[in-house]
Image (tube, rainbow over all chains, first blue to last red; front, side, top):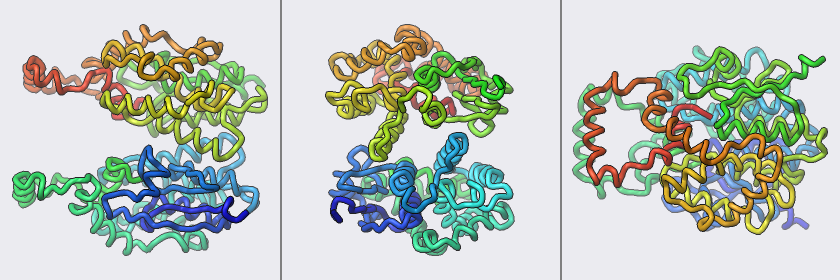
Length: 257
Length: 257
């Protein structure tokens, strides 16, 4: 019965966490419907509230009418449910390698607020990749699915953080190239420039208000005037973290998965 | 070769996250060595620094000389590695049920800073349990292993937070009783009173200094005097969260798994 097996992905096009789910589905050649949840709008849709009442976040995979939440959780589900179909599993068979892949996928999700910390994390991942083609070895797998969406932010890192990934993490950049040769990745990942533009709009001042659920100009006009005066000072500009660097942190704070 | 198959658990006796690992090992009847890492001491041991250089946290499972980190990750590893031996798997076979178990295990690990939020989380879990004997159904499984260590804090919730779990979450309390009938749980879980005593010592002011890695009295004497004067005020006492309620949050902040 077609309806019984229907697969729907609720996501926003530039959500790095949701990209994982869409890549995994395409890797397994699973046809799916896409319901866009516009994260720039403050209120969550009825569908999201109904399907993920606990976190009210996306991505959500709906299969046989039941929701699965949490992006890495969904990728594992997709791997277990449709792993046989494609012949290849995203997670390795060996329990120790599976545990390693899960460990580094969680590591990829950690908060990275400051530039130094971000660079440390990226170089850790560069070390884990080593001389291998993909994180699991010769084949594209779970950890590649988990990490490749973050490469869409490398353009922003350069523009805002002054981080040149080609110099800093050349192996990671070669890996990005290899991943981008795959159709599943090509069909899901937006360009760095597209991501940069939406992040600027999204996670800067206006985005902050939208996700925090309050209009700062309206709620605290005096505070906002004070903030603006402070930001005119060199000392403040020097210390305040870059808005793009705050991106990962904000997503966690506001429960955007 | 005995050495090749050696299993070592690096943990501290009252670490809720580590209890999961020890319960899982006992459920699978895996013999293991226990290396105590005293979390009350600021510096981490050479073994922890070597085996978990990324997070420097416990628990760590060492098997065949290689480390596995992250408590839920380790429980899955134990389940996959020794699941056949005992005949029963901790994670359900059905992919959707597996995804559900992982989702709620992650939910159990979320930060719970305020009393209202903690109660909301507990009642959510009470709802997930429903009329079932265990979270997975009739058998003790993955989610029971993941959640039962937190029951050692219920005594503290009552003493400090005024939360009476018997009234608030009667089903959860019956579930605790059923879990405590298992030898694996009996042999690992400390009593609520023991946990309460060590938490008081551990996560209050002295614990804060130990885990944050600085001596506040020495570093900021004026600030500490100011804090003490503030705490004498009714308004401040009324607003400041309970130290025990800050426990979960601090553990995350200071990277204690």
